Length: 234
Image (tube, helix red, strand yellow):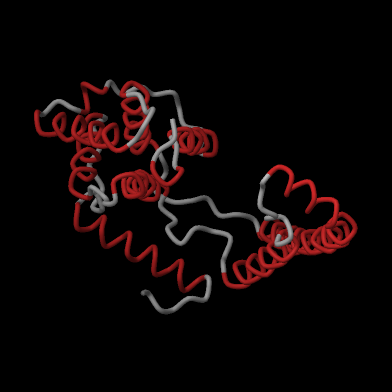
Protein backbone atom coordinates (compact mmCIF):
# COMPACT_ATOMS: atom_id res chain seq x y z
CA UNK A 1 0.00 0.00 0.00
CA UNK A 2 2.67 2.45 -1.03
CA UNK A 3 1.75 6.11 -0.94
CA UNK A 4 3.26 8.95 -2.91
CA UNK A 5 6.92 9.69 -2.07
CA UNK A 6 7.31 6.24 -0.49
CA UNK A 7 5.15 6.98 2.56
CA UNK A 8 2.97 4.09 3.68
CA UNK A 9 0.10 3.58 6.02
CA UNK A 10 2.35 1.09 7.79
CA UNK A 11 4.62 4.01 8.77
CA UNK A 12 1.64 5.82 10.28
CA UNK A 13 0.45 2.64 11.99
CA UNK A 14 3.90 2.05 13.51
CA UNK A 15 4.12 5.65 14.75
CA UNK A 16 0.66 5.28 16.28
CA UNK A 17 1.68 2.07 18.05
CA UNK A 18 4.80 3.81 19.37
CA UNK A 19 2.75 6.67 20.83
CA UNK A 20 0.41 4.24 22.56
CA UNK A 21 3.32 2.19 23.93
CA UNK A 22 5.57 5.07 25.02
CA UNK A 23 2.81 6.94 26.85
CA UNK A 24 1.05 3.77 28.09
CA UNK A 25 -2.29 4.93 26.75
CA UNK A 26 -5.42 3.14 27.93
CA UNK A 27 -7.43 1.22 25.37
CA UNK A 28 -10.15 3.84 25.44
CA UNK A 29 -12.40 3.65 22.44
CA UNK A 30 -14.21 6.85 21.56
CA UNK A 31 -16.83 5.85 19.00
CA UNK A 32 -16.17 7.60 15.72
CA UNK A 33 -19.84 8.53 15.61
CA UNK A 34 -19.32 10.32 18.91
CA UNK A 35 -16.61 12.48 17.33
CA UNK A 36 -18.45 13.09 14.08
CA UNK A 37 -21.77 14.17 15.59
CA UNK A 38 -22.02 17.29 13.48
CA UNK A 39 -22.51 17.16 9.76
CA UNK A 40 -19.51 19.43 9.12
CA UNK A 41 -17.05 17.20 11.03
CA UNK A 42 -18.33 14.08 9.26
CA UNK A 43 -17.99 15.82 5.91
CA UNK A 44 -14.40 16.88 6.74
CA UNK A 45 -13.43 13.36 7.84
CA UNK A 46 -14.88 11.71 4.74
CA UNK A 47 -13.30 14.34 2.48
CA UNK A 48 -9.82 13.72 3.91
CA UNK A 49 -10.23 9.96 3.45
CA UNK A 50 -11.40 10.41 -0.14
CA UNK A 51 -8.51 12.74 -0.98
CA UNK A 52 -5.88 10.27 0.26
CA UNK A 53 -7.57 7.34 -1.50
CA UNK A 54 -7.61 9.34 -4.71
CA UNK A 55 -3.92 10.25 -4.43
CA UNK A 56 -2.59 6.78 -3.62
CA UNK A 57 -2.55 3.27 -5.01
CA UNK A 58 -3.46 0.24 -2.95
CA UNK A 59 -4.67 2.15 0.11
CA UNK A 60 -7.95 0.73 1.34
CA UNK A 61 -10.62 3.04 2.71
CA UNK A 62 -11.19 0.77 5.72
CA UNK A 63 -7.51 0.89 6.74
CA UNK A 64 -7.25 4.64 6.36
CA UNK A 65 -10.47 5.32 8.25
CA UNK A 66 -9.34 3.09 11.11
CA UNK A 67 -5.89 4.71 11.44
CA UNK A 68 -7.18 8.27 11.13
CA UNK A 69 -9.95 7.59 13.65
CA UNK A 70 -7.58 6.01 16.19
CA UNK A 71 -5.05 8.82 15.68
CA UNK A 72 -7.71 11.35 16.61
CA UNK A 73 -8.99 9.26 19.51
CA UNK A 74 -5.64 9.16 21.34
CA UNK A 75 -4.94 12.92 21.27
CA UNK A 76 -7.01 13.85 24.37
CA UNK A 77 -5.33 11.06 26.36
CA UNK A 78 -1.76 12.08 25.55
CA UNK A 79 0.04 14.21 28.15
CA UNK A 80 0.59 17.88 27.45
CA UNK A 81 4.28 17.67 28.37
CA UNK A 82 7.06 15.13 27.87
CA UNK A 83 8.54 13.60 31.02
CA UNK A 84 12.05 14.79 31.91
CA UNK A 85 14.83 12.33 31.12
CA UNK A 86 17.45 11.69 33.82
CA UNK A 87 20.86 13.25 33.00
CA UNK A 88 22.42 9.76 33.05
CA UNK A 89 20.18 8.62 30.19
CA UNK A 90 21.06 11.71 28.15
CA UNK A 91 24.81 11.25 28.67
CA UNK A 92 24.78 7.52 27.86
CA UNK A 93 22.75 8.15 24.69
CA UNK A 94 25.25 10.73 23.46
CA UNK A 95 28.17 8.40 24.18
CA UNK A 96 26.41 5.63 22.23
CA UNK A 97 25.98 8.00 19.29
CA UNK A 98 29.71 8.79 19.21
CA UNK A 99 30.62 5.09 19.38
CA UNK A 100 28.24 4.32 16.52
CA UNK A 101 29.88 6.99 14.35
CA UNK A 102 33.28 5.39 14.96
CA UNK A 103 31.91 1.95 14.02
CA UNK A 104 30.39 3.37 10.82
CA UNK A 105 33.77 4.80 9.80
CA UNK A 106 35.58 1.52 10.55
CA UNK A 107 33.01 -0.35 8.47
CA UNK A 108 33.53 2.14 5.61
CA UNK A 109 37.29 1.43 5.68
CA UNK A 110 36.67 -2.32 5.62
CA UNK A 111 34.26 -1.97 2.71
CA UNK A 112 36.80 0.08 0.78
CA UNK A 113 39.49 -2.58 1.23
CA UNK A 114 37.02 -5.24 0.13
CA UNK A 115 36.04 -3.12 -2.87
CA UNK A 116 39.67 -2.95 -4.03
CA UNK A 117 39.98 -6.75 -3.93
CA UNK A 118 36.68 -7.51 -5.65
CA UNK A 119 36.39 -4.62 -8.11
CA UNK A 120 37.50 -6.54 -11.21
CA UNK A 121 35.32 -9.56 -10.55
CA UNK A 122 32.33 -7.40 -9.61
CA UNK A 123 32.64 -5.29 -12.75
CA UNK A 124 32.58 -8.39 -14.99
CA UNK A 125 29.62 -9.85 -13.09
CA UNK A 126 27.60 -6.61 -13.29
CA UNK A 127 28.38 -6.19 -16.99
CA UNK A 128 27.05 -9.69 -17.67
CA UNK A 129 23.85 -8.83 -15.80
CA UNK A 130 23.58 -5.37 -17.37
CA UNK A 131 23.54 -3.67 -13.97
CA UNK A 132 25.24 -0.39 -12.98
CA UNK A 133 28.05 -0.40 -10.44
CA UNK A 134 26.42 1.62 -7.68
CA UNK A 135 28.43 0.06 -4.88
CA UNK A 136 31.72 1.96 -5.19
CA UNK A 137 30.16 4.96 -3.45
CA UNK A 138 29.13 2.99 -0.36
CA UNK A 139 32.28 3.67 1.74
CA UNK A 140 32.16 7.41 1.03
CA UNK A 141 28.40 7.54 1.71
CA UNK A 142 28.95 5.85 5.06
CA UNK A 143 31.62 8.40 5.99
CA UNK A 144 29.31 11.24 4.97
CA UNK A 145 26.55 9.69 7.10
CA UNK A 146 28.88 9.55 10.13
CA UNK A 147 29.81 13.22 9.52
CA UNK A 148 26.13 14.14 9.27
CA UNK A 149 25.31 12.39 12.54
CA UNK A 150 28.12 14.22 14.28
CA UNK A 151 26.81 17.57 13.08
CA UNK A 152 23.26 16.63 14.06
CA UNK A 153 24.13 15.61 17.60
CA UNK A 154 26.58 18.47 18.08
CA UNK A 155 23.64 20.89 17.97
CA UNK A 156 20.57 18.81 18.73
CA UNK A 157 19.25 18.24 22.22
CA UNK A 158 17.79 14.86 22.93
CA UNK A 159 14.30 16.22 23.50
CA UNK A 160 11.97 17.25 20.69
CA UNK A 161 11.70 21.04 20.21
CA UNK A 162 7.96 20.68 20.73
CA UNK A 163 7.53 19.18 24.23
CA UNK A 164 3.74 18.80 23.91
CA UNK A 165 2.94 15.23 22.72
CA UNK A 166 -0.67 16.16 21.88
CA UNK A 167 0.39 18.94 19.53
CA UNK A 168 3.31 16.91 18.19
CA UNK A 169 1.00 14.05 17.23
CA UNK A 170 -1.41 16.44 15.51
CA UNK A 171 1.58 17.77 13.55
CA UNK A 172 2.52 14.23 12.56
CA UNK A 173 -0.94 13.68 11.09
CA UNK A 174 -0.75 17.02 9.27
CA UNK A 175 2.65 16.10 7.84
CA UNK A 176 1.27 12.81 6.56
CA UNK A 177 -1.37 14.69 4.59
CA UNK A 178 1.24 17.16 3.38
CA UNK A 179 3.46 14.39 2.01
CA UNK A 180 0.56 12.60 0.33
CA UNK A 181 -1.53 15.57 -0.86
CA UNK A 182 0.99 18.41 -1.02
CA UNK A 183 -0.77 20.54 1.62
CA UNK A 184 -1.70 20.44 5.28
CA UNK A 185 -5.44 20.63 6.08
CA UNK A 186 -5.01 23.08 8.97
CA UNK A 187 -8.65 24.06 9.50
CA UNK A 188 -10.02 20.59 8.85
CA UNK A 189 -7.66 19.02 11.38
CA UNK A 190 -8.47 21.72 13.96
CA UNK A 191 -12.17 20.98 13.49
CA UNK A 192 -11.68 17.24 14.03
CA UNK A 193 -9.49 17.81 17.10
CA UNK A 194 -12.14 20.11 18.58
CA UNK A 195 -14.78 17.45 18.03
CA UNK A 196 -12.58 14.75 19.61
CA UNK A 197 -11.95 16.70 22.81
CA UNK A 198 -15.64 17.57 23.10
CA UNK A 199 -16.54 13.89 22.62
CA UNK A 200 -14.61 13.01 25.81
CA UNK A 201 -15.89 16.01 27.75
CA UNK A 202 -12.59 17.93 27.66
CA UNK A 203 -12.03 21.53 26.68
CA UNK A 204 -10.19 21.75 23.34
CA UNK A 205 -6.64 23.17 23.64
CA UNK A 206 -5.88 26.66 22.38
CA UNK A 207 -3.67 25.30 19.61
CA UNK A 208 -6.64 23.45 18.08
CA UNK A 209 -7.16 26.28 15.60
CA UNK A 210 -6.20 26.32 11.92
CA UNK A 211 -4.04 29.42 12.07
CA UNK A 212 -2.52 28.48 15.44
CA UNK A 213 -1.58 25.04 14.07
CA UNK A 214 0.14 26.73 11.14
CA UNK A 215 2.07 29.03 13.49
CA UNK A 216 3.10 26.17 15.79
CA UNK A 217 4.37 24.16 12.83
CA UNK A 218 6.44 27.15 11.70
CA UNK A 219 7.89 27.54 15.21
CA UNK A 220 8.79 23.86 15.37
CA UNK A 221 10.55 23.96 12.00
CA UNK A 222 12.50 27.09 12.99
CA UNK A 223 13.55 25.47 16.30
CA UNK A 224 14.73 22.34 14.49
CA UNK A 225 16.77 24.46 12.09
CA UNK A 226 18.41 26.37 14.95
CA UNK A 227 19.12 23.17 16.85
CA UNK A 228 20.92 21.56 13.90
CA UNK A 229 22.84 24.72 13.11
CA UNK A 230 20.79 26.02 10.16
CA UNK A 231 19.68 29.59 10.72
CA UNK A 232 18.41 30.45 7.23
CA UNK A 233 15.03 29.22 6.05
CA UNK A 234 14.87 29.01 2.25
